[in-house]
Image 1 (cartoon, rainbow, N blue to C red):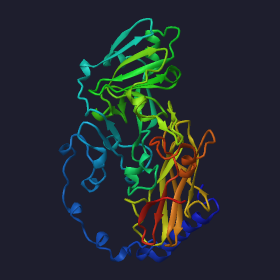
Image 2: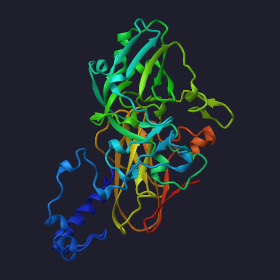
Image 3: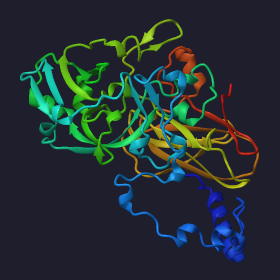
Image 4: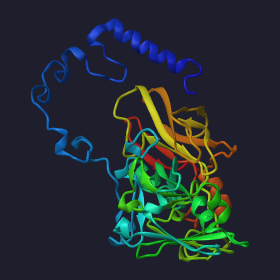
Length: 423
């Protein structure tokens, strides 16, 4: 943990001791205002003199108007029209591990399907003893579970394969979210239908106009896949697959079929559009990797970063970020301030769930000099997040998918951050 050598703890104790000794007029090393002369504390503010609106003014709660800048964003060249778009999570403006429902990354190929749940059905067919059709009410009669998982697009960070882009944290690594899903294990409905001998794969199909479909190994389906109808305690949002979506923990987000309407059981993969023309990895020698389902261990410092610079002077400073792995939990995250010359363990804070985001912090006294910030995740299998050069040595630069290389932010003496790469 950071500060295990006593340095961080000593700094904090010294700061508190100094503040107590100096009284109300204390000024921290970080440049806090002297409390005795700050109008924000000495004068009555408008909200201290007037009644505020009632909660019923917003029947569905919304964030403060001062947080209106915290929102999903898209880039123009990834949004040719309204029917196929990518909207990125503002991970540089969030904390903890749960992504708010209104800020979750989303990708759609034919607009957002508007489905009446009373008319929605899930069909199970193919190599089953009893082809079945379920209503939403039918599905909700099975024993349900609550699980927290990350969803990451295989193309997350793909723009960085050939080198650093003029992008901040949101556009570089924001094709991800982390939610509590409520639903039922997929195995329940498969067992209800009865699997025939020879069943080895599933075809999951969405009800959107693009008819999104992906092949999924039966072993994975029976292990931990879910049929989810709620996220973070409320019904799925329409853009997240309302009223029903597939959850495929730890595997690429394109497989988490939204607006799920049909599951066909078969003996081999179907090789649909999204697993042939896309979501394969073109290697440097011209060969292509297929079925690269799992998302490898990855981390990124979310603050400071290009859209979240350091806004104070030298002194106590907090680095924070997120880490995740499609193969288990995160065992450790290391942070470097000098581009990988010296690494120090970060402090993991909050719950540690399988195939879920982990939040890390690193507290230190910044001396005002430029830094090269990086983070490096190690998961519960012992896998160590690689450098981008190490990935390119194996895969070349034409893949576009599964880029989990270490990210570098260059911080100048004014606290501004830039997306760079160390070679």
